[in-house]
Image 1: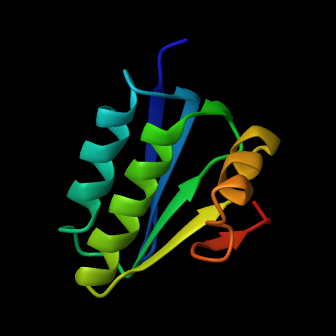
Image 2: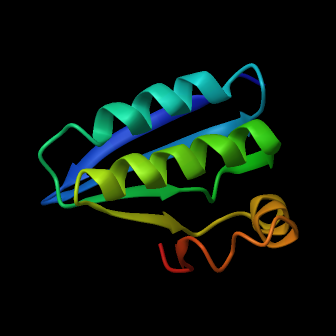
Length: 105
């Protein structure tokens, strides 16, 4: 399944909502969006992961890169409502304590 990335801005919060699978072939699209967000005028970058059905290590690497870019730009970076498969990958990689993970919508 191809990855679709919905983007919206809610005040000072820039929200990305990938839908589908984040893997080796689709991760560059998410990477491009998150790195561009670090340069935009917003205070917070949110990645809503509730509709991600699968994520491999390349997807995790993109999230880490997005976190670093946001931090270097003085922005808050948060993962919101990760799906069960995504949460399993983050927990397995012990990144659940690195990211600001919010369970709400």
